[in-house]
Each structure stands twice: as C-alpha cells, then as structure tokens.
Length: 173
Image (cartoon, rainbow, N blue to C red; front, side, top):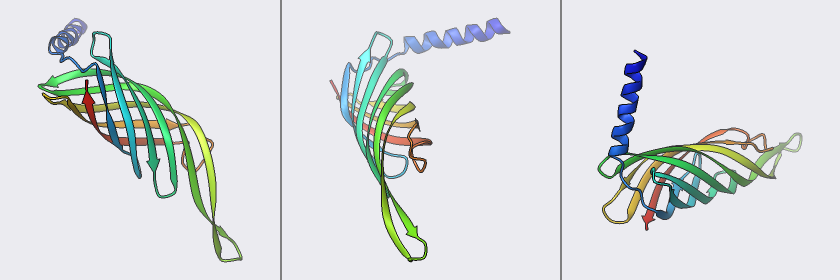
C-alpha cells in the first residue's frame, strides 16, 4: 500500500512539473487589503531558479479605527500551475512592523474621557496561500490570505494572530 501511495505522489509531482507554466522574471504593483481596516502595499516579486519559485517583498501602510502603521514583509513562494493562466502559490515569510495605537480611556469620578497613544515596533512571522491569474498581456491578478503572528509589546493588538486578505494587481516584466 505504501508503494502505491508513493507512486501516486511521484506521478502527480511529474504531471505538475510537466504542466508548469513559466512565471514572469519580475512583477511590481499593489496589494490591497487588511485584516480589519484598510491597507495598501507596494509589492515586488522576483523569480528565482528554474522551478517556478519566487521571492515577494511588500512594503505598506495600514489604517484602522484606532491605529495606523507600516509593515515590511518578505515571502518565499512555491508556484504551481492549475490550468491555463491560473496558478496557486504558498510559502513562508517574515517581516517587521511599526504601529501607533490610540485608546480611549475613562477617568473614574470625573466622567471624562481622554486618549492615550502607544507606539510599538515588532517582528512578524507569516506565510501566504493564494491564487493568481496571468493574462496574455503583462498583468497579474491575485487573491491571497496571509496569516501573521506579531510579537509586539502592545498587549491590546500586536501580540496575536491576524489573517490579512489581499487583492494584488501587478505589472510583469
């Protein structure tokens, strides 16, 4: 039974490699989205090696109800062809973020509110999984999910798991 399963996996791997579509050497554009709020990132992808692998670098801004900040993320991605111009991809990554949070505080006995501000910079461990469509002209559209685990000191928002969903539009060259 083990030999049959291993043979099936090896066969699927060969079929996947035989149907592999060349990915563009470079792509640059925007990735829009965020887990709760709005964010925009400048995104650059660079193909590496002969096996449809690539690096992705994203530098962006995030804005929400009580925070704003910047993030720099680097990802390694494996890319597999589905059919036609559709690919799916997945891979690990890491990054760095700096955020400013504003909190509304109530002063007991004075019936008054004031705002407290906290700044935090911290590392991030992340990964990505997504699907993309490669048009016949140099345009690449993608939709992905990027779980991010932040290691900040701010106990209100940065030390948790976020699911960043993004739509990417990139020019390939």
